[in-house]
Image (cartoon, rainbow, N blue to C red):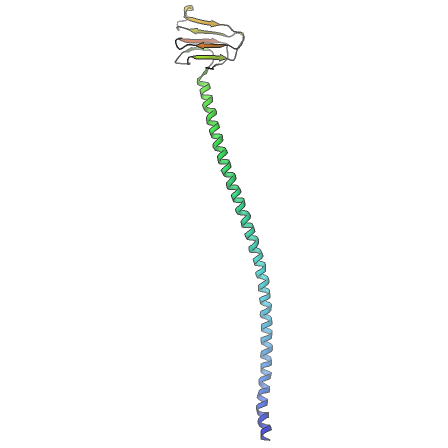
Length: 175
């Protein structure tokens, strides 16, 4: 009987421990299930975050492409602006030369007001021009003159004192 009491004495705590462990095991299983759920949620959130990171990477790549396109366009604009500036400078120089090599009616001194050379005018029905050897207004100061009925070409010599014209329009150096 003592053996039965001893077995019973040993069996009761074992049964008590077994019942205590069952609760602990059940609690551990519940905790593990909860952790598995948390892990699944975190994995879902991680996938969602990775999707956002991928979208940001794609957006950043598009941004970099757009910035490169913008830089290329700015470089092209700079080149065009330089070209326009060079053309404007060339036009301004041509206009200055044209202005320096053209004149309207009146009396102009050769070598002071105008250069010697061949000039063509824009014409005029009542045009009068005269190459002059002096500025005294004398008839003898006229080297050559004409009343052309339209555009005229006149060669003014470096030895001429001056050139006079009225109603002839603009004279431009052609040679």
